[in-house]
Image (cartoon, rainbow, N blue to C red; front, side, top):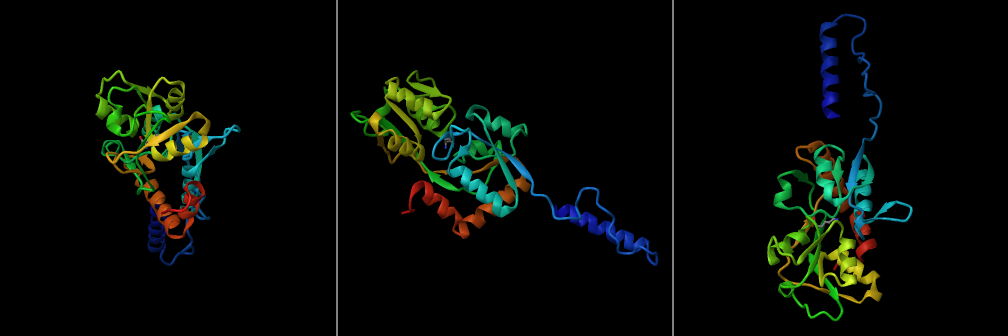
Length: 267
Ligand code: LYS
């Protein structure tokens, strides 16, 4: 928008100079793009894999809700743009960004060096790490205990990465699922002995499925991860807006309010 304003200004200047002494000096040429009135807030299409509560999930009425959703709505509000969330399976989510079907992605996406080659990330907005879910009577007490066990992960996630590193790329013991709920279902059915996924999701699942008798196993070997909002590589226009909104909601208390709503008070 700023670029456009400059263009209008220099056009004006040109008019003024050449029309010196003429009748219409200083009258702005009518922009053909509505540039004269208040700019319409742009609406961006946001991809999210809505099967990752409490970050993003779909209600029975097909409404997409969660921490990420509230957060990005607040960001958009502060930065002056609009968002439209579209449920987008994890499997194709990065392609959808690449080919322009989505303007941005918010989906509990960990910022990794590998992903940074293909897309740009906002400032981090959430700290996470991997966590293991096992049945209550399981003897698994640390990450290394997963060796020789069948482990469920969501394909292409950081959980998949750490388990692949531990068990080997072609290990038949790794069972990959297109969503984390499917991996957890398999744990319930006894098809895998453990599931490795982001802590927030595992905690939420264990808490809400007490009847299933799961417990969580933490391990110091898991590194800190940071979630970011992804935009197409080089899309600095959208990225700057997102970072601007993020800064604002972090400094005015909105972020903390949303955080507490989902995760309780920060320690
Ligand atoms: N944070 C993890 C990752 O980026 C999990 C994301 C899964 C979203 N459904 O790989």
